[in-house]
Image (tube, rainbow, N blue to C red; front, side, top):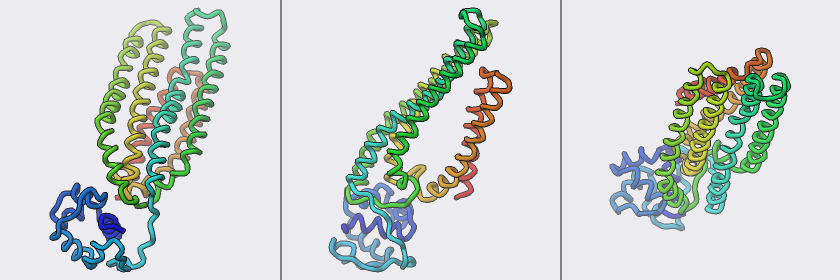
Length: 322
């Protein structure tokens, strides 16, 4: 084990973050990060301080072949799984593939009501030579087909991605050299991530403009067209935001930063259990409400409301885990 790995291991065994260790040494967090990723080496006085802080010998810190069975205040610390360079690179590759497939599946679900809205709206306006009931039946059939294909694709890819689920839920360590590589890629993706999120949010907001204008017009077909345009804008915005988030999340997950710190992993386990029940109930309410009222133009509002409410629930859970 080299110096950087020993610093990381001893820091984690003491339960300190990089910021906390940096504070004890009166250096920046970036300095500690560079030591642990072997991008730089501590000066001699810092090595002496590390020896005192961790209560280990300088020989143990400096000699790569020197091992020491001492963990201050934590003699029975369990071993932590280590991520190899091959695993890290494969995970990033799979996550990039997910950044296209997952948002594509979500977009399919968002746009699935479009045929129903258009067919029913055109039938009501007399633009189709079919009854409103038939138009509604065809539209609803297409809706189910699009959802089935979209969700099926998500499930198939989810099975493939499942082999790395432990990275999201368990604590682990990175093998030598991985942290530096991941940080470099993360920094390179920072600007594209910000641009995609900004454009995505902008599209979601701009999509409301044609919808509001069509709502003001006294024309049912115009209202439907405005709603469809809104869905396309929202779908494009969501695609960009999810795509960017999945790419950035891959680096955060490996570095165990952001939403993937030890504390937040515990909170995410609770949120996952809540989500299973929550979204099943929301889906049942949506289908029941829509069938009873046959007002598909309005019942879709349940989904953004449910999403906002779930975000609030997740926030409460995370606050409770602090």
